Image (cartoon, rainbow, N blue to C red; front, side):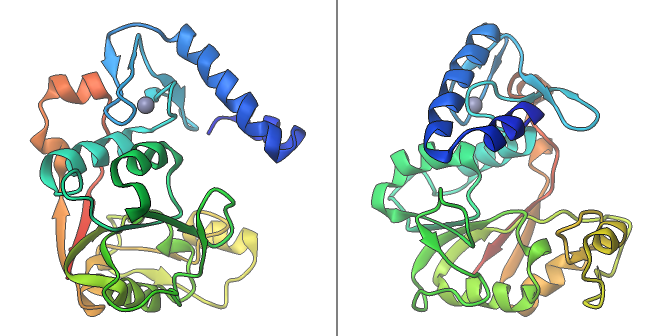
Length: 252
Ligand SMILES: [Zn+2]
């Protein structure tokens, strides 16, 4: 989210924050009103999307639900290529992206479980290295941009495999440096500056290389990498303003 929300967060007590953010959203929504683009997640249209990121990418953030390019790409994939929208699968969503929460809640009701180590927005507080659910509990698991923060990511992957139903599937995205064939990690680097220098961000504990899929397979999963942007026409890519991220889909 942008700098203004960070500032607002610091200034305002949590219980009032939601109200302020919602009003903010309505105002930005008005400013961006139009029909040139559409967010496939919240279904709302806009004249354009908001710029976002260090380089201020144009048309990056939906002014209504704050989704980014990669969120919209994944959503289209989920909608068009998976069974998520049929039959109310039981879904565990770890460190839930806010833009997905409302639509998934509406879609799945009680079968939608959000979990986080400490976010008050999630229903369950848990550590993914020791998931407090029995074997085969979930049809679907989402856990995006989390494993790069976790000390024992292999244990977390094994836990995801354990709590997934046979026949289940999941989306486990992490940032990957495509120039690395071997994941770089060093548990002796523990300070913020050192981690930022070594792994690209102060709270990352490794930088994944292209061997990420090997780790998922070691945990038991079948792994499919999907370049979904290639399956979407250039017109649709522009209309929805989509990313071109590789999607890592796992199956049990
Ligand atoms: Zn949206």
